[in-house]
Length: 287
Image (cartoon, rainbow, N blue to C red; front, side):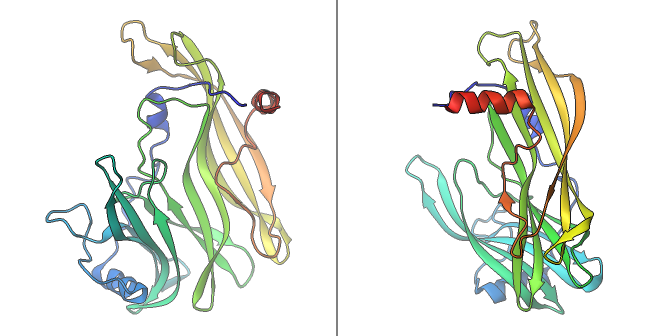
């Protein structure tokens, strides 16, 4: 049985915060109305976090398609149901809609249900539209939607973590299809515990996606590059609960994923960038 190493105190929370929080991508009223009408949502189409309560918009982001400025990409989460979880907190069920909107009408979309829990929590800025040049073929350009959970890590430590989920979508008629999913950041413990220690090591990675010149089954291959920082955490004796975390080492690790005719694969906890010592440790402890 794999044991928990209890690594990283509050500095993990700082590292895992959304890196795109300052990039505002508001949705106008016409776009929200169009998406709500397509999804059959009726009610107060305002933020769920404003007073008076009862707003149905838990999160929303919109952006024009670069190669088609008449098309707006929208990612909206509507509140469908709110229940008491039995512990004095609200538990929400949300309707997620990813849509392409033209002239006030949804022309293609995808819907899904989100059940909030300790790991997945939707907040006002949970979505970011990514319109990088994801040109998969001469006829197909994908767009990305990044989802960032608002679940707080608190001061709890663990041996690994992941965040900022990217999904690449393509249009197929009136439907949108997800062809690739990955996490965009992560961290892993190298050693140490949070209990009565002076020093621990960990690695933190941010992932970027690029298009390869090679292709498989008609779509360009994708390269995932992890930009990895090795962190040495030294407890400051003058402030018992704080850590100083200077970068001690940086490296990049690259892997290529290929389209199999249906997708490039779905993996929200990629570990290809982990150092060999960690892979070996986890393999040994699981045996």
